[in-house]
Image 1 (cartoon, protein in one colour):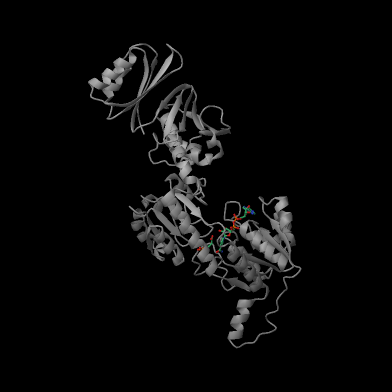
Image 2 (cartoon, helix red, strand yellow):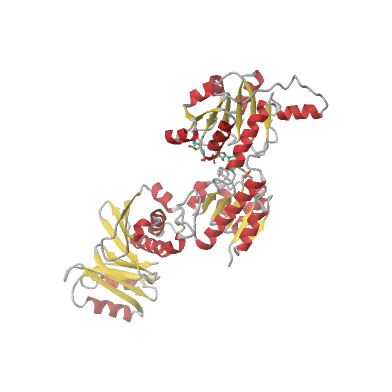
Length: 528
Ligand SMILES: NC(=O)c1ccc[n+]([C@@H]2O[C@H](COP(=O)([O-])OP(=O)(O)OC[C@H]3O[C@@H](n4cnc5c(N)ncnc54)[C@H](O)[C@@H]3O)[C@@H](O)[C@H]2O)c1
Ligand SMILES: O=C(O)[C@H](O)COP(=O)(O)O
């Protein structure tokens, strides 16, 4: 059946066309995101959800989204999506991190000019027939200092444009390297210095616990008298009450705000303040940006739903369209190794070590590790997948170790997963043969070669004559057909392993009977 996607916000029709061209069924309901009840009622039908900022993808929505595999944000900010809840449910959350950056940077520059020259108020007054030439005295931006808080994609475009306007640009961003700042012609400063020196301040950070109210009364007190402030990033970065007071007192000469603590902002403490310019979250609203993000999100979501390629996900390593087909059998192998180890581990796990050797070491091992962890955790947590597994492992305090090395043995690609518990380490290794099928090639250091089927029996025993015959007879007498039989041992008379694919369920009584055969140490039915 074709995957189904719901578009619940006002995306460009380009997205609809792309989904259809890719054979995906699409429901375009641009107002649905604002109707919480309806969204809850319908979301269970869809494999994908494409949104902007109006749809709030809460924990409740995610709980109701029984088929959802991917949420695509046609834009940058994902603060309207409960990412931990999506991750826990194995739903990928992806965005389009660059599609609207230029447009938003241009809006910030436009807003800076709007407040420098009081354009909206001057427009309203002129159209009211007042011709108040002396009321609207402005300031130049040339040679003024612009303080940028958050110098990532948008902040750095703003910096470039501001330098073009002959402004001096200073920036505060804990993740901005000296080299990058030099390249951009930006002076890196601490936050207090920025507050002290800037004539204009523009915000371009996400809203986090650290950035919430980064501009509050105390910060405003440190600023120059007559400073002008622009916020085209997120509501919540500015304490709106404090800004209102500073606009009223004249400490802040002007502010231009595109984003509000509560949106849609139909009333706000800032409305009506002197020299305030407000726009209704228009930062990304240009034809060009909306085409970019709609096209990109639809392509990314389609690639994932159809080919398993992952791009710009916030909760899962990327898998390119080129590597997706090459990675598929290795993902399966990683899941099988994880599942094998997971089904044999009952005690508390301290660490999972995954070694990649040969060609696989140069591939996307983050995705493979996520697959191995998913396989490992599935016996305990049925709904876990590659998206949610790393977070679950972390939550459970399981240390993940990953090593990569050149080919040493006969296999072009070799993967070994070791589970470390308080008592022991248990390793299982595998490869993918040229037929594209995964094989288990080593268990606890013992070589063998087995393709895993849906139902397997794992038996460890002492290597003694007669075991195989007695074991096969027991299965046969119980009407359990053997599909494949793989044997391995460390030395004659030493430890041996039998990995057997069977055609039907193995009753518990048969498992205990096998356990009573001479020399048998462990019998475990496994499912894959
Ligand atoms: N108004 C709109 O319509 C609109 C449109 C697009 C993006 N946005 C918003 O703009 C913001 C920036 O987007 P971006 O694409 O540039 O993101 P980005 O991730 O490229 O850049 C954000 C920068 O903020 C920095 N940062 C993080 N914590 C910080 C802190 N405590 N202090 C200072 N800097 C900090 C990061 O290091 C990073 O460089 C986001 O909040 C995004 O949601 C708004
Ligand atoms: O984070 C973003 O991309 C912007 O806030 C744009 O939001 P919008 O898509 O709702 O205009």
